[in-house]
Length: 229
Image (cartoon, rainbow, N blue to C red; front, side, top):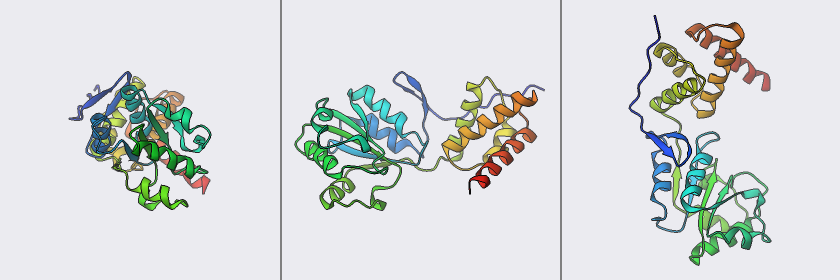
């Protein structure tokens, strides 16, 4: 019996030349933030979400719209702020990853206030939960409009699994997807790791993707995680 293709009522958003971006309730606010540019309440915003949730993808979509430069927060210095700001739009990624030059980042937000720059900042940690030493930067950063990418819901995780398998030319029975969905870690990164593991096992064992193969892949991933503790 040939496994039937899965269909989900999940919109595919063409990511301006990048791969399709799957949209669901969990990331709709972040997608809306990017889509609304330049009609933002202020000229800066924060995009927050865990690693692998799609922040960088959306930053690249925004770059295509705004012609922004993209820079890691740790690479922003007082010396290079004028050069970075010259483009008129700037994406600053991973504010939560130190060390960062808080005075340089505060300078960037001053340029935003002067209407000379658009800025999109990303972080894996909610701004309100971050410790920032420079009070002026802390208050300004934490007051920016915030769009959060939440943990993926079932529909999005299912669609991501299907897409990841399809990218590898694998057609997987819906029962296997459902089996994985209730046993895997609830993250986009986990979905990618699981499909990679299943694909590797299928190739190594020369078997089709079945529930037993998925179970072995889940066990392997769990074992790897225990080994890192």
